[in-house]
Image (cartoon, rainbow, N blue to C red; front, side, top):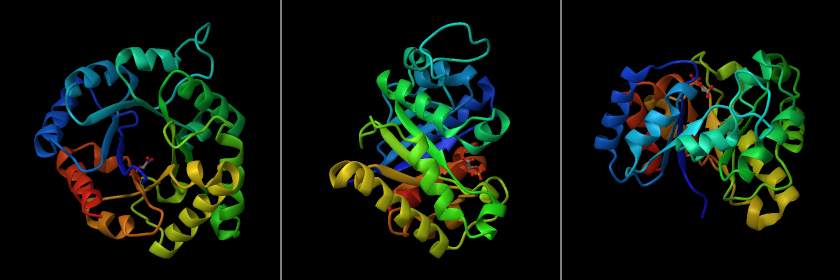
Length: 249
Ligand code: PGA
């Protein structure tokens, strides 16, 4: 039985005042029938973890370094996230692949360090608009998965998120057929590489312009086990709609 997960990625948004949104989430979903995760900016991880303690809402980081410590100004380690109360960390988001030139090998190393520290790694993949138009989507996703997911991945320590770059923050959503095609492909690749017991049980999230209004349809697609949500995770009123859709899927 795969875990369903509604994950919010606040990106570079939010100050301590934003934590009030979390109180609303806890009140509206005291015992959710799916996993709920919020990944705030690093400055809020500790405060959010303290605020959600004893609730069903998990806290995650948005990135970590591949090294466990050392001379890396501005970076944070997986152990620091654990120490701050995080249970998850996103690695390989397309914005990091783009802004920080992260390669599949970098992401693989980060995921390995994160899981060794006890975090669940949410490993992202996704094609650009040009790559989709050129008919290369499945090749790109296959290569990203092969390069970014470490050998040490298990269903307990790894979640995969498929996020087409052209759908992130744009309001453009792939058709349900397009989402289904990629999710079935990812499932097949995971089973082929890790065997059925692991490959069939790693949760695969869809991300890119998920909203309360399209969540029901997206969650009905085969092999979609939840969502990684940017914009619509910032306000509790939107995110609760997505959580409810996942609970009912
Ligand atoms: P979006 O972002 O929901 O704002 O499109 C998704 C993501 O980048 O995780």
